[in-house]
Length: 288
Image (tube, rainbow, N blue to C red; front, side, top):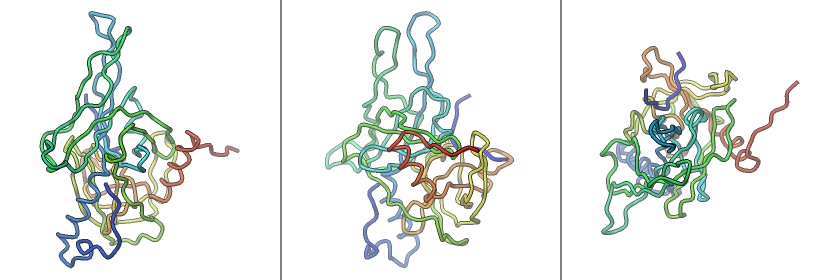
């Protein structure tokens, strides 16, 4: 069965090809270099719903789910799957950046608005479903996100955060046209709340078709055996050079966990839709 890969409760651009680390013959060193450059561009998304307190008039934000996304540009646009934010009434985005000298690392800095009540905002909260541990030597900053536009038919959403430029590391975009079966594929995301998890595999197929949350077909989808699990939705699929070639969106699994068949929306399709959503806030398609 087709399973979306967001969870639910019931980077700086690459340098030129002259970069010695990326051209290193050691595959481990090359993979490490790709991860260290791309990881700051991958974000952790928490979503919330509003629930009224049974004993007061206050409206509280309750955790709904979590997923992944990636920084699109230095203006604060974040790209993720529509199904990650579909039922949410609010969302927050946690971003990594390299810690400055003598600055605490691996801590969460809350910069989000608190829960709302019928009168005013409640005290600020730093809640996140992100599990402890993960990457080191990084500072985590959390921002309230707003939805700029969504395309449910292609399972794409664009969020925006008011983050300073030095907190934003857009990942270099590649091309999905011309991909060949057997090429290396790397996925970075937040499966089961484990932030910035790297998995590796190959491109297992191209030209696949999956259904979006609305039932509309998404064509030219990339198939990969890089492990994708709940929480990976919206995260980037990278080529061997660390460029984004797709956005992880779903898995085919009888159990709901990775079975070695993951699907990513090709970046060529994502580019067009994201640029349209940023400019117009929606995608209009002709209907006969």
